[in-house]
Length: 321
Image 1 (cartoon, rainbow, N blue to C red):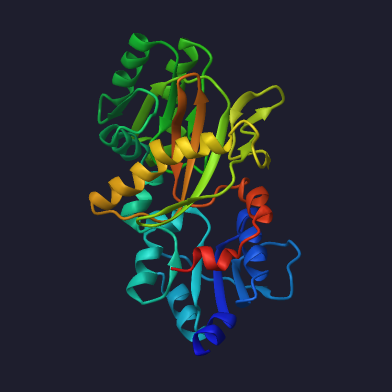
Image 2: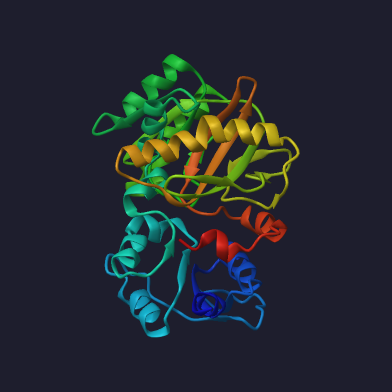
């Protein structure tokens, strides 16, 4: 009876201020086991009565503002929305303080924080992805351009975090070569470049929740990445989304689980970086089967806003460690 009472009185903190975090907070507020959700910093969107906003500092590495708030208010769970705090180690700080958190450790979040690490992990584990090269150091740009000259039109990526905008998908060899120079706009995030094979096919996003050992997929979604009509122009962080994605059947989800999500979770555990949180696979459904374009270490924006409202189960139950 005491356990049921505690669960029914859960106070949850959601870190982040975008549409994704608003959706997470509203979905958590629907749970009968949650009596209060604090969204920090939140935004101007309307909120149900269970949800409040506040402004907690996310200053690494101590994250003292968040830790003190959680201790003062007996917070039962912290859900981290954006990638930057996860890459900075907020989950590690919360775990060290004994505060339950949904989100991967700093070591595991490198799966998104470093595209170079992510690609090399997939190569080690045999996870299907595009052929690639990783370049860094004084000859980084020259070596990346030489790779393009040899392999033709390639996608050019900054290895570090760029808010979903550090990828250029060219349509010609000349555009690919120019993309290498354009990467300098991303500063330190582009000190390492990933240049990879240009894949063809529809893209799909698949979220999965992992406790470090098991993996539970959610429904697949598609977002609209290019800024202009007709799938033209540079990539954005996402220009809207819809779910479920009809191009990704249950059989396809099962294939992605077996060839991508399960091997990555098992491989990261074996390498000492157990992955706990939302594992978001961005995939190309190529003629040769699903290929991973990238991994993200959190729920995606805008896909979250169309995936979570379709859930019939209790989100709190799914996220609580």
